[in-house]
Image 1 (cartoon, rainbow, N blue to C red):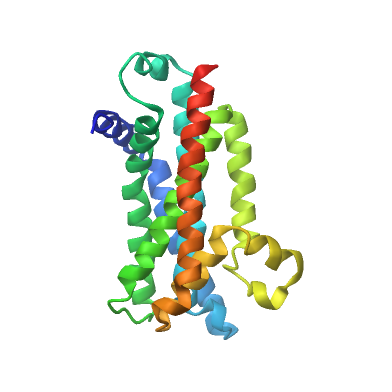
Image 2: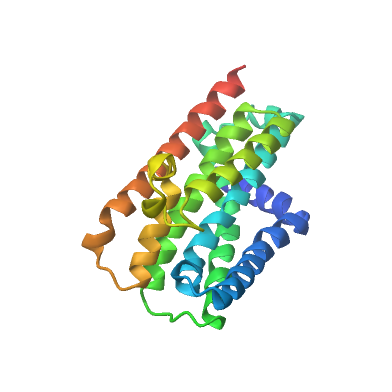
Length: 242
């Protein structure tokens, strides 16, 4: 538990400036209201609240990539991490401290999406907890990707990389279109990444699917979450040796 004091400090850093947190939670609300309004005028299933809530939640996690990458990059370029390197903390402790600091924000984003979805007419059952598990796993993957970016890039590079990843999530996650229907490179790239699997699995659970129907989606997202954290630790350790 040596990483807990650093986690506490990171939490203070994150919430000291409320604008990113407000933006990260307000944007999903705006998107849900916008696309639901479009769905009422053009009744397409993908714009129904049940389909939109997982999609908007996963898309909003793209902000976690930018926020986490920005924080660790800023800390890395100051004397803060240099001083901490004199402590007995390991690279895994550093990454865990940053990961846990952003976990409450990811949970808040998910809860906000479900609350707004409920107001818009989405039925809620106990299965929502399974969906939350899916969403939090992909949130961990996004934070891990942010850790990798923040460990390797400068603040300017992180901003550019985060923006590119937001576009990738938007185009290849299947949030706004059916990747299986579109096919081609969109389907190939989309299902090579975790975002489409998280959205498909979450939607299937909300529609009443069983574990056997979504187990492959779960393992895919879990694998990405695990690999991103491991790579984040490796990238941070390598950079701190430079």
